[in-house]
Image 1 (cartoon, rainbow, N blue to C red):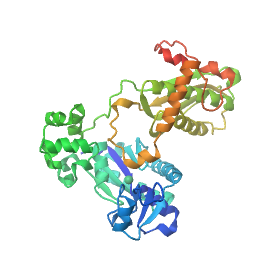
Image 2: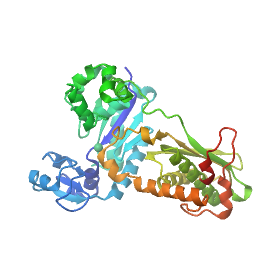
Image 3: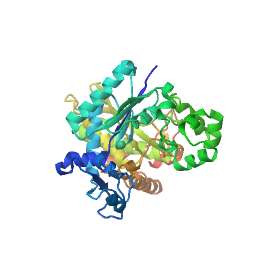
Image 4: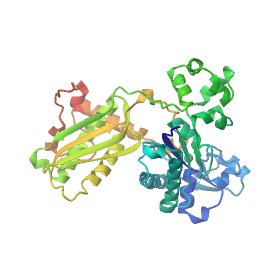
Length: 417
Ligand SMILES: [Mg+2]
């Protein structure tokens, strides 16, 4: 039997980062709070606090009743983001990250030998060791390995903290029968209500209905997909008609120096981002490729939590760019291509699927999305580059002008992107 996915979920993430950073918090019950007041709720709790029943979402005045010695720590989001990147870099040493599901959860696709149980579990152990050694001894995770991403995530919930569980299709529903329906990713409160109303109260009961019945209760085709997911089948998440959005440009000789070429790259990226928003997509992978005057081709990419705002995408592009131009041989860049991958249509997103509470607090890009949309609106009314992020020298503006390509006809709005 084949295993295809490894899902890694960090344990008590924010609390662990604080315990890693502040020695006096180690081995103590702590709660991370957005502001220092008893009238707020914990956005994370250490395992020591969890032992008292304090959880994410517990009100602090309640939490203090449960655990009088509870220490409240104000959230420092920049620390969690910094550790997020350290953790990603460490995991990437062992296996490429396929999906960043939230600030403390990633999914990786197993390849070759890794699909065998023994190798998969060794890989998981190596990742755990690496995180402890190179990121911090307080950084622990639960890893789930399974035939599909859904079951891998489910498996990561089987053992906490510091878990490692392998879940096969044949183990369903037996090994997960103690979970509540709402413990399964994708089953939100309203869905639990619908299942209960149809007489389905437990996981074994959920498992035993037909795909047709599941679809009926669910209210759409997602229900049928869920039926297959529960059985370990690989289901592509959301069908996107479009696979990529990209722009490339051959630079005029006078714009080929690295510094200027970077501005062209940013412009191409902003143009692609604008098209992404107009088409109502999110992207979670960006790739940059360059060709030097001497014919050297270089490409690099980055994976991130889905985004469509200029700020995030520019940040990612600059990271990749820095990496690309590290190559000392690069003096002049002749061609640049920017491509956004892993597109998900906004209105087809399953918000409850592979998302969790803390991600919204940290990686919330709503504000930047709004700013980006405002920029789009202004640009479409007053002309391209009326507002943009960073400087765009006058002469470069024409670089990203819309031309009629043979492969597609640009939409009208594109002339202002
Ligand atoms: Mg977690």
